[in-house]
Image 1 (cartoon, protein in one colour):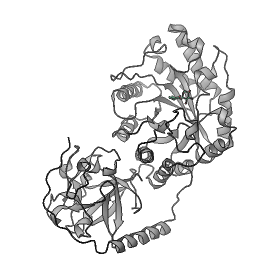
Image 2 (spheres, rainbow, N blue to C red):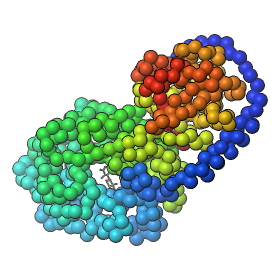
Image 3 (cartoon, rainbow, N blue to C red):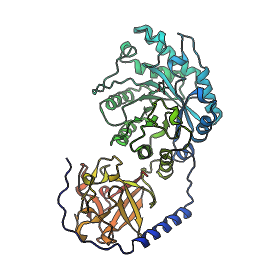
Length: 495
Ligand code: XIL
């Protein structure tokens, strides 16, 4: 349990000047916007491209004749995955008789509209043709490799990346391989499929793709161990796809998980993103976008469908457009995150402060977020760091006082970040307190390389994680500014 310790008695000042402060802040925000005629792109694909990434969707061939659908898909997305049409049952319905009509239709629609294509998928336990389901042993192994070779050869030179193998790990909490007819042909079936794919289409990036691997857990660690082994032995693999079929919460270590794979020397991609509506859908979409932007080898994001009515998750309404094709809040949140975010290894933090935005403040040293302890809404509640979850207790808005300082207000409580008791000492505690216009609630923000340093107006000291702790619940205090990583904060826009 998180508990809140007793807080010392606090002063209470009037709210004099608050309206003036708010008005001035609005004018400044407008001036910044005018002075900086943002290269803000107006579609997901164009905005992602400005960050060196793609934004894609899954397409169903049967829906391309629906002009609402194809208009949105063509306007917004620059990477296309066939939702079902390049799977094994679609491309080889009878053994050695290949059928590319629907897959080609999607491919040609994409290429003729200037888009790239992810191939999905060459080898999977699911959606196998009946003939293959009944095979085993060396006959199945040969049939699999023939399938990989034939399909990758047919699409040679036209595919950006293939999901060579899909969903080969189990959900057993131990990181084991999934039992399947393919697995029973021998543990080396995955690397055999990758080698066959490389030989057939050396120009395509070759990915391993799976679900429930979005955070650091036994399953993702099983995949991680396989990829590390492949890299060490020279088995061809270029990328790992994270399906990211998400519920109403995002694993706190989502970004860290992407990063650990990237650190193995592979690209990472979010390949089938959809997020259950009913929780914090728009914020979660922003957080996922920001996580990709913060990992330089995260090369793009694909959502698994266009409108909610196109989704395979009936009733979850997990996509960016409603069933009528209107943009949802989730759409705006993704576009804003793409437009605001850093790119190309800039660290992912905002480079200027937008006083209308909500930010999560991620500490550079710990990777944890500035957090109102125990979800308190009380004056004097202490501020700590906590694993990032993008909850309201981790969201903060900056209000300019008009002279280079900002008040920093909690979305949860509406209270300001405050140096307790107007301390000017090293180690002075940071709490939340009702806005009182005091200089101990005002902070000068200096942003450099995507990281902000926040200096108290009253004390001249910097906001930091005490003792450079990396633990959940570690205290946020003020301390003499020394440019330490524990005094640097990434401003990740989430709303
Ligand atoms: C789904 C399709 O969206 C559905 O239309 C089809 O009925 C079943 O497959 N993981 C994958 C995708 O890799 O291929 C799946 O797509 C969703 C889960």
